[in-house]
Figure 1 (cartoon, rainbow, N blue to C red):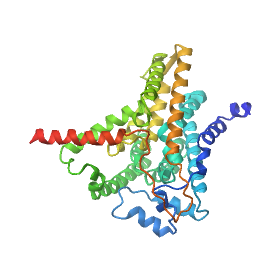
Figure 2: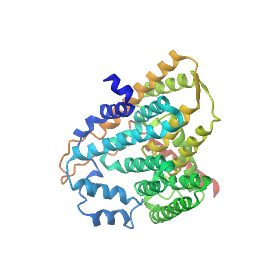
Figure 3: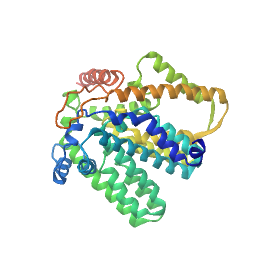
Figure 4: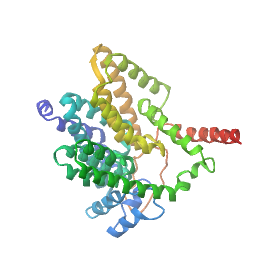
Length: 386
């Protein structure tokens, strides 16, 4: 078995995914699942994707449920699709990373990405299949850009029409193609970006009140850009210190200690060209999080930040300290993943009999408290301006 894993890293990655997420196939339906698993026709899926009240444009996501519902309408089947898609994304991430940093570093990056706590949402929640579809299409587009560039184009389209979080991917691919003198391909990528940006912008404009209804009338004028800037800074920080996932101060201390030990056990070099490319991709894929800063929407950008960090490690100075740091971070991350899975551990197996389910999908009330404080701060700013 060990020899098989050594000779086939992809097998190891799939084994790790099945080990961590295999149990979720026994879970039932929650919340949005009921609407999606009852899509029974192509036209119904298409209309749901483009109805005026839709906040996002994601027909690939809706159509995926129509096609899967043709086979089975059982929770184990839908959960198995999500787990399989997550395994595919991990393998694609490894293949992409291997092109620029070698097998060992690429394998380390893929294993770390499996352990990212917020990836537990799409891998566990049936309704979060859009993240997995977007990630799979996006990684395929990146992989095909070198050898089959024009096949990369429909993959990029599949990505953006799965979820808005990868909306800047066509712009990046267009920029890369332009620099390679592939002007026609670059024009197609930029055209895809413009079309999707216009559709997404229209949907956002038509539903901005729905997006900010939780804040009431607190957001207006210059305060909206202020909110965007805060969300951007917040989601960067929370990818390093995942505040919503800590179950207590001891859990946070364990994570922070592992992080400090990891940083101080390595020598760093941040001026490599590939490192800069990963950082750029991570920032681009994170820009939509300025609207919604929940960690569950930034799993794809986290992959590129992981690649940036690994590529920036010059040498490991203190191996015992490094190993201890890895152990602390792994234990902390595994606890976050398990507890996140438990939030979706429903026993509701009938797609036609919805059972009420809570919305508390994180380990603490960080986002609730944050929203309350934002309203207080913005109300104070409005009063100050007046």
